[in-house]
Image (cartoon, rainbow, N blue to C red; front, side, top):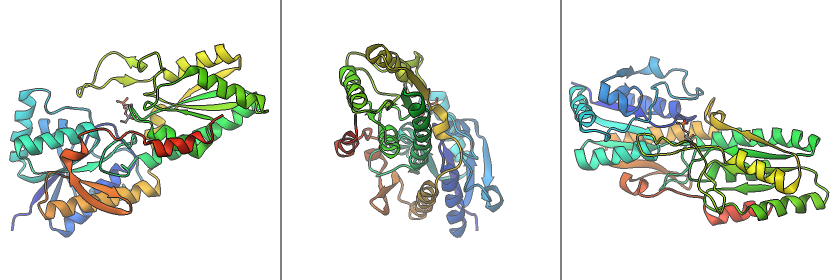
Length: 345
Ligand code: F6P
């Protein structure tokens, strides 16, 4: 009997836990007697027909590895008609009966359109360090990024304290302040600034002053890369947009550090954590979440429940409509930010 062939791809920014998902899809798929095909470099691999077989040997030993063994890209398959036509032709030529797309808002947004407009049978798996996808409590990769950022804040604490300095730490997360809020709480930040709430510089400086007046000679200011000053726009690294129309954020830390030093007179230094937050081995939490997502994704394929995304709801893995998941970004909720604020200043 001919085996069912299932394609798997990883798109968008890489993150720790991707290999756990790939391994879980492959292992569960083998139980269902599926033939699993890895598509290289996100949607680009389906446009260019670049694949590898995913079998026991291919996924052996990859669980603790960061990044993705399939490679990734920020290719948008809807950018032009020719690429879309090639993608559809290759999907057919490869004899795929389903596709599992592991990605964030862009990859899953494209997956949703391919399912709805092109009738390609697709399942989505939510990935991103930013944790900004709706309909799931957490995306995998987020926990690892939070742990890395927390460790960095711990390290900055000791040097800030020794030198009596203000340390500004710029943290990733795009237009959502999840990593900044969680790592800030875990690392005991004195101020956390996120995209959801424009920065009031007067308030930041007065919080720092208040701390100094009560005898603390250093402060840790966590700022999310997407945060903006009350009277300004997001700070960008470059003007060019990516294929999905996204800006490249970065630089708010430096801008804020300069203002804080000028206004308070306290010596200030800035650290930009950057891609360190995305690299390396996943935490146990992300390995387990990725594994559970991967098993569930293969189960959905087996049951032919397409157009769905696997998700975490409380402690349960569920499936939700892809359409709902990509409708709007999940930003930081007030409840958690209010907890962070208890410790400001
Ligand atoms: O979406 C994940 C993320 O790391 C964001 O936090 C960040 O803004 C962006 O990707 C960086 O993208 P790139 O890897 O293309 O520089």
